[in-house]
Length: 138
Ligand code: MN
Image 1 (cartoon, protein in one colour):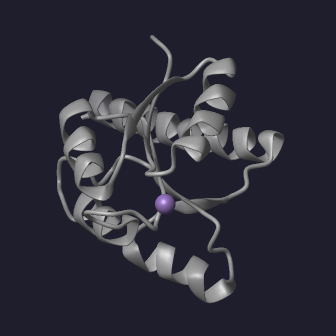
Image 2 (cartoon, rainbow, N blue to C red):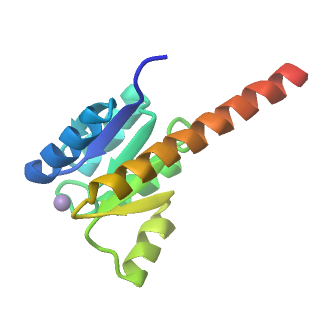
């Protein structure tokens, strides 16, 4: 098994660089899409293990891109976390309503950030193992 692959959908390159460095140091493979539309295309093409989605973006914003990915059979099981400075309760609700599995607040705090990423990937791994075991039992 190779490194987990994480798609970052982010239009601000300073934010992206910071996230990229933190994740690469932790051993993840990271790739970038610079707006929601590219993010949807990249997720469909590359099937990442995790998507981190900025919300405010040109072309297509993160809410719309999340709705698209979460209503598409091909991509809806990929864990998707909002990467957002919008962390007031109604803003968190909005991200979850769009279909985000959770959210990470910006600016990122390294340890908390990595813990959530690790946990999101672990939950997905457990789900897959469970599915494989069930298939084997049939
Ligand atoms: Mn943005």
